[in-house]
Length: 139
Picture: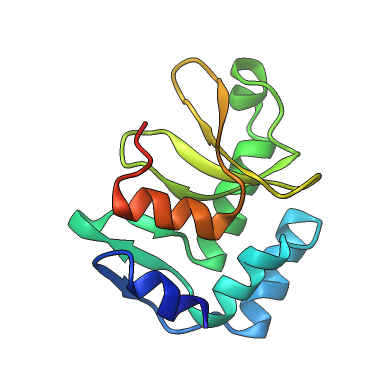
């Protein structure tokens, strides 16, 4: 189980699993399927809270709503490059957000909200969680 792996990396609390309806609603709102690894995580936990309340994995509902807002906001469309190729799933607590790519190898990027840069941070969502929770990744 993915949650058991994650428990080894540091302090975290896990929400109950997302329901199949939660995941379907999320995918419907986004207009596409979630990447497999993200879907598998949500099937085990509908959100992960780290130390100091840091949101390591958003709930299916928040993934749907925040991504829809980013993609549909006229203000965001004027300020930032398009977000359609990404699915945001966590935040750094400082306004920056983490996203998994919808194409290619499903790698994880951090989006800097101040300069709209998108920087590669991990090859997978699980590796992102491990590196973020153990301090191997900092932004």
